[in-house]
Image 1 (tube, rainbow, N blue to C red):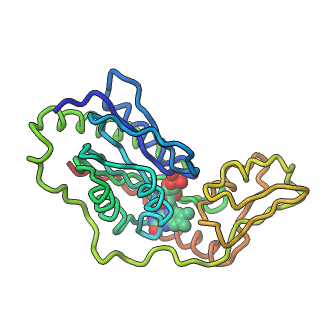
Image 2 (image 1 turned 90 degrees about the vertical axis):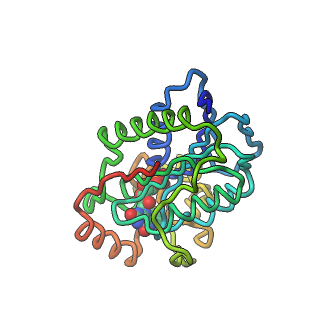
Length: 266
Ligand SMILES: Cc1cc2nc3c(=O)[nH]c(=O)nc-3n(C[C@H](O)[C@H](O)[C@H](O)COP(=O)(O)O)c2cc1C
């Protein structure tokens, strides 16, 4: 099969997933520019892929699942139409559990043919300077592995006669899936002494629940805890002030300090 064009499709509030998907695309060494669908924000119009596009679909793992919002945005915006897909979960050095299996199944449901899958490690959304968790991941070594994976995908595509000859791609995970994130009304807070009301927190929020007037207002019921507003705040004014998040971060920092390695499935 030809492997000439690719479409990168990703959800990435704190940009680690985007870095991995970009590196995989780079490793595929295509002659044409890669097209992108950034599902991090609601889209008005969605560029549909060409029939020959290899789709690289990336999401963070949340509680060992694909975030429900990502499943919704994929279903609303993306059609496989028999195209090959590379499935990528980026997780914060704890575990990805059922997320890759769920992503494979959603991709199949949308009409993609899975040709490769990978789990990479990204700095945990809750990581802080005091309690780092996978800080700085993906690092240079991760990105090199992602580029090499892209190059192996290209080789696999070129060696493959027709997509319907491929056996179903096997990835780790269990069905029924584990419970995902349970809804609860928590969100980051704002330290008003540090906040300059610049509005960056509102701009980077994937669910658009942050509003900046003479104060920063957050509709907690719509917060998915992605922590994009915290990582993007130029003055460090956004922070988690929730005991449950603090306890989770201490747990991750102490019990999941040993760096995990990317895993690839072809
Ligand atoms: C609500 C939530 C739940 C998460 N659950 C997990 C998890 O179960 N295991 C894990 O290793 N990382 C978990 N993470 C960390 C993210 O998967 C990780 O930081 C990822 O790199 C974020 O991707 P992004 O930079 O594209 O937003 C979670 C993050 C959030 C915000």
